[in-house]
Amino acid sequence: MAKSRKRDFAVSLFPFLSILACVLGVLTLMITSVVLTQIDDESVDQAKEEVLNQKQAEALKIEEKIQLGDVPMIVKFQVCFLGCFLFV
Image 1 (cartoon, rainbow, N blue to C red):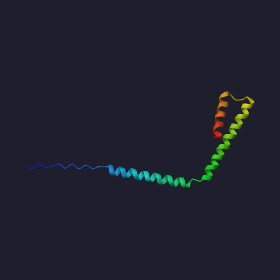
Image 2 (spheres, rainbow, N blue to C red):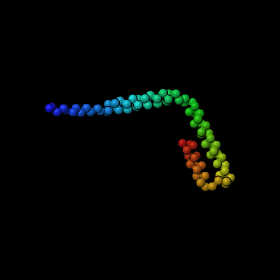
Image 3 (cartoon, rainbow, N blue to C red):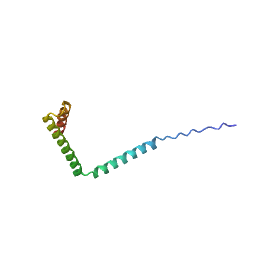
Image 4 (cartoon, rainbow, N blue to C red):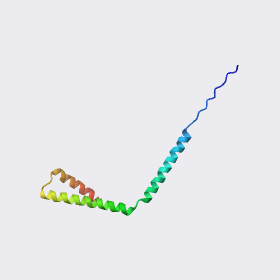
């Protein structure tokens, strides 16, 4: 009797996975570009300005307290540190 040969079929998933990774990367770039084009620059500038005004108001309040002597030394350091970031 003749021995039957077993045929070993090997399936490689590398091409499938590489195509899947490329598709995911392209979709990520497309979604990112769509989102970035829809961001309104004026609203971002307004939000930045509001935050800056709030931080300046906080710094002025703490400065007034420092001048009155109502604030401990650690807060004085924080105000100095905050002032450095406001004017950068």
